[in-house]
Length: 353
Image 1 (cartoon, rainbow, N blue to C red):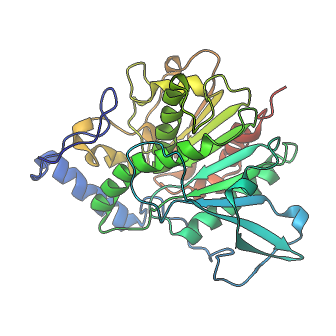
Image 2 (cartoon, rainbow, N blue to C red):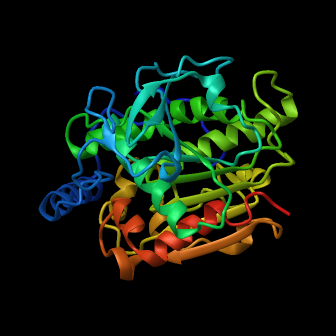
């Protein structure tokens, strides 16, 4: 038997025997492989675009510095797995710098990322099978479209949380590797969020496994608050607002239920926006990533509003009629109505009264 990691209440990681899956799980896994391969809907792969401003690429043409977003990258792609929230993390930081009409990614420092504490912070956490350049492209697209969709909102600093999601083997094995890596990434993200000034407004937009990383991080922060962890700022009752937008969440459907493993997260957020897709091809077979859970994906189901405290603003949308069976994040950004939901969920009223 393979030893499990420490479990949450109701269990997220479970003991997984080194034997073949039951017949139903095996058939489901094969069906998932065929469905995604035949349709070209590989989980979380962005639509083909040129790498924008990669560190080794030529400068990117830009209209002007005034029209470019304040965009940063925090990368954990080189960091090892860890068992708890670290006291420090050697993350790699880059900033999208604009010089005249050109922009390119340049090395930066973490302290610089945290300056201007009054400026709202938007953190984008991508899903699986993203290369570093893909994450940058998607983050830049997100920042530009949110700014264009909600121009009256305060100018935010957008941070791309780039985690090691490059493809590793076939789909099912790759998905299980990233599913387990999400626990480590949640600890790195918790450390990052724990360095933010309590009064600074924070909005997180996460797609697919990015949602799992987000819930892991916020759960760690909420648990750390009563303990008075010296390496993170208190998260419960922080004066700065916290908005959460989760798209096509690769998270168990009962994650935020009263007995769910991430029920404490609701104590540390002010708004939750769920963009689900009841026809999502990849999420249809989420239960086969870890058959022991025997639960469907939140991103494909409906979540009861009663699971949230009454003071948490809640919006839930089924995007099936717009994005179809697609699991990628790009279609959500390409739809004017869904893009408005994302921008409003993130930036609308983020600065408070």
